[in-house]
Amino acid sequence: MGSFRPDPNLLKKHPNAITQTQIDERSRFIGALLGAAAGESLGAPHESKTAADVGTPREITGGNGWAAGEPTDDIDLTLVLLRSIVSRKRLDVDDVAQGLLKWFAGKPKDIGNLTRSALENLRAGEPPSQSGAIAWEDSGRKAAGNGSVMCCAPIGLLHVKNLDGLSDDAVAASRITHYDARCVGACVGVATAVALLVRGGKDAEEAVSRAATAAGAHSDDALAAIERGALRKPADLNVDGEDRGFVLHTLELAFSALVAATSVEEGLVTVVSRGGDTDTNACVAGALLGAKFGKSQVPDRWVGKLKAAPELTSLAEQLYKQI
Image (cartoon, rainbow, N blue to C red; front, side, top):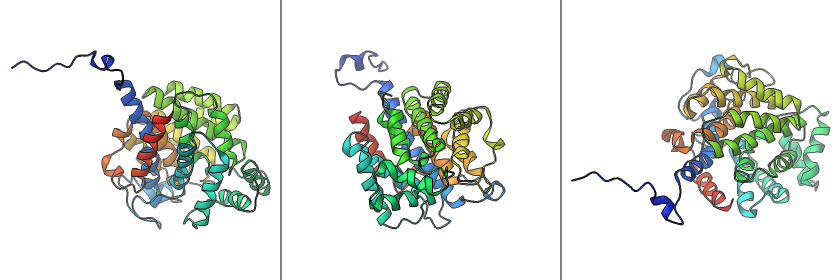
C-alpha cells in the first residue's frame, strides 16, 4: 500500500480554506491572551516578594489570597476591554468605562491606587477622557504605575490586520486610568509589539524596533525602557524594590523576556523569579511571549488551571473573525 501524500495545492483550491499562515496567526492571536493569563497566575502567589524569596516557580498554585488560576485585576481588566471591543467591534471608551465601573462596583480583591482614583472619578461623573488625567493631577503628576499596560493586549489584537489607529486607541484606553506619558507610551509599545508578533511570529526584531519607535512618539522614557530590555537579560534587571509597580520596570522586563526567552514557559518562569510586581510583570511578558510562540506553546498544565481561559479563548475567536 502506497503512503498517502496530501496535495500541496489543496488549500489553494478551496475558496474557504484556511492557510497554514492563518492557522499560525490564529494560534498567536489566542496565545497572546492565554500567555498573559498564565503569566498573571504564575506570578500572583509571589507578588511583592524579593527575587531571593520567590525562587524559581514553575507551577500555578494558590497563595497570597488567590486560588490557583484565579484572575487578579490584570486579567479582570483585560476582559473588560476585550468584551467591549468584541461587542462594539472597535474601541469605545465610554463602553469600556461602563465595564470598568461595573467591575469596580463588584468590590474587586485587588486594585491599584491610580486605577481606584480614576474609577472614583468616573463614578462621580467625569468622562473617560478626563478620569485618568484628574487622578494623575491628584498624584502630583508623578504616578506612573503599570495598571494600564497590564491589560492593553486587546488593543494590539484589534489592529493585527491594520495598524492604523492602534496608537490612538492605545492612548485613549490608557488615559481612562493612567494618563502619565510613560504609561501611555508603554501601552502603545506593548500593543504595537503584540500586533506585529501575531502577524510575524517568532522573529521579534522588527516588533521590538517598531514598538520602541511607537512608544517614543509619546515618551522618551518608554522608548528607552524597551531598548534597554531588548539589550539586557532578565536576570540583570532589578524590579523588586519599593518602586516595583513602576511601569518602566514592567516594560523593560517584558521586552527583555521577549528577546531572551526560547519558550513561553522559560520566559515566564524567569520573569516571575525576578520578584516585585510578579503578576503584572508576567502578564505583560506573557502577552508578548504568547503572541510570539502561539497558544500551543503555553503549557497545557497551566492553561488547564486558568479560570478565565475559556472566556479568553472564546472572545479571541470572535475578535479574530471580526478583524
